[in-house]
Length: 238
Image (cartoon, rainbow, N blue to C red):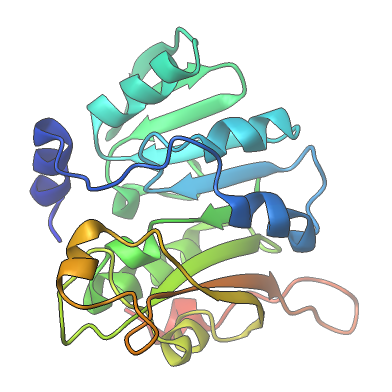
């Protein structure tokens, strides 16, 4: 999935079903992450999700990262916010209310851009990337995020031999590989009815070939002094 793929999809509106409300998995499971309401939250590959507005309403400073200027503009329009925008290095920073969206490539994020982040809400980033890019993505976050970051991760699992992503199927074993060195807890599994329509056309979504959403809580391990230990992902994935 190169950048042009997603930019073209936003330009032509070929994004499949877009959730207009807040994801119930966020509402149900975000308290399990255990973040202070004042913590700053990263939403990678954020699109125009209303989940950012929910997180901001919960008291968080929210930092989204998104390739498409269309997505960023539509988020602030839908939220009745007039953002202030300026160029910052490889990104255009759009800020309105308690939400900032960095318009640019998630792989260009660095430690200065992610300074102060306490939590990550990944609702659509990992599943948007093929396996090789998922490894790069996990490595970038492991290297660039501050120690102690807590993550709520949503994944899908389905028979990918029947249809290609995105959204991609991410097996449980891969979640444990990508976030090795951290405490990984599976909070919830359900057969979802909200897969893209083309999945149903490929025979997915029924009891014999379910599309399952899984919700994960990922928190850092700590040493004997209670200090967060960085994931070894940063050293094992190039």
